[in-house]
Length: 220
Image (tube, rainbow, N blue to C red; front, side):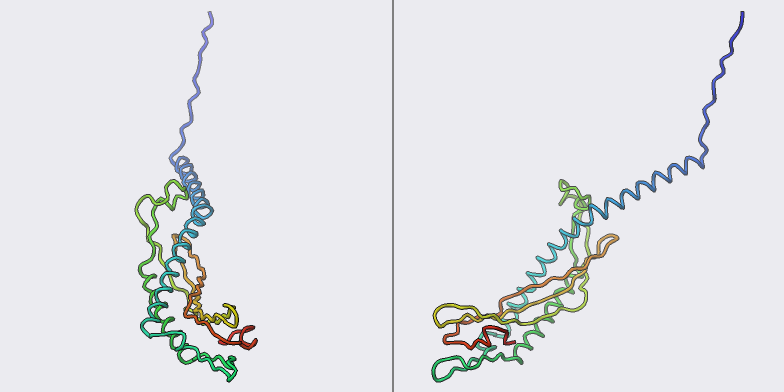
């Protein structure tokens, strides 16, 4: 009778060093996947939502500042525009009071810049769920503060527009245009964008024939 001896192969145990390497590779892969997901999926969503909110706040801020300055300074169309008529009731000259306009521009620019600086200190709050990039979680979880940084200065100007308003009547409008650069400081990302807003400063109906030189161009 022949006896068979069965020998079991011993399983090789991984050394601590090998286990550490595998764990390190897994962690590295997770970090890489997280970074790719964050920059490719989450960041575009965060930037878009933040930009919309910043533009909304900027629009509201600029509109409020312009209205406050107009009230505080008692500005009206007649304070800014001088119209000279001929003996035949034709418009001979339309002049803008550049001194008064420049005073308004400086005051509005200063106030808008101050408001943007305050906005930068307060920042914007975005819920943690929004950072997942999954619409279902938007608005959920604790808020994370997104810092806003005014980049450069606020650029302002006044534009003049003429439109027909009836027989021998022309609607003249003055607009205040504000352009500003704002930066958003997100986790591992900084995004800059430009906001531009046109606010109606004042308007008036001019009765009489207006020279084409005014209708075809700007008087400012």
